Image 1: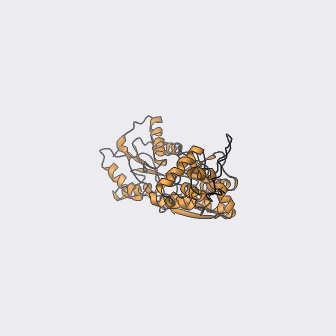
Image 2 (image 1 turned 60 degrees about the vertical axis):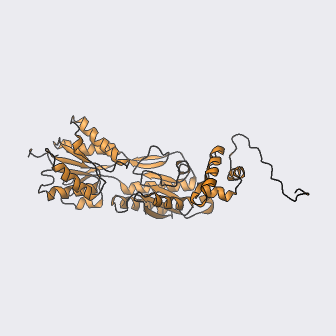
Image 3 (image 1 turned 180 degrees about the vertical axis):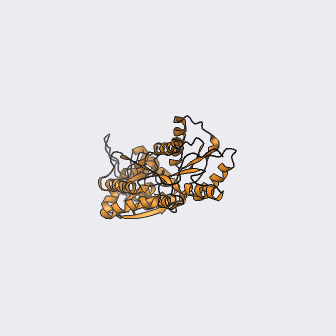
Length: 355
């Protein structure tokens, strides 16, 4: 202490040798704030004013500091729970996948939370805050992207796993299928029945799996020497109604298709209904094939021919991966590619005699 002024002089800053890991205290010292403020600025930015948040982030980047989220969670034994984020809770595709994840979590004594985002950033941010705040230990993403509020740099150092939808921009563990490959096989199945005029009901192009399945459809046509007709690619959103609307559009063409490859089962069921409402039959007039093999596929009339994804296995594998990251810390990126199966039921038949 300075005997004249009574003030405590600042502690001299220590020099660090090259390669020595920077700490949160280093960032706080450089920024002139507390370590608690640094922690909030990097993990719960909504609780810090913009000026301080930006300053802390800039200094952390300069120092090469990253918050050790995994270490913090392991020290606090935060919640022993996982969060599964999906786009749309009404989509039946997710139920079996979640069931598979839950089976592993029960064995490993983890609980499971499921959140539907509907694509809203404020909802994504809310769930990201639950993860960053330690209320859940790991994150399984069926959205194909990180939720708003979670940076890519932090996600790569955290227990985060992608399922079903890949994202090449994110260096994360993932459980996937070969979407282009199985879309090619589905379309080739229609071609093998003699169909040449084959339509594709696409999924939303903002979803990674949609352009992948369209790629497979186009590849099958090219391999068979069938010219690509842009009129036969109809936009959709994976919904029942989009399937109905697509068929209405396709039947209005001068030369309607004799077969349709749908990007998912729900839209395929809508397509079947629209064909029947138009006074035509499936597969007598138009063959239809889906993708996913949700539970409803076997109960349609006629039962839907589709590509079966191993959804329970995908969910179980994802839970295993994320719990491994929680317990062991960051590891080399693991990417599992699981096999699918073509399920032949009653919606695909030989190409009819031209009407």
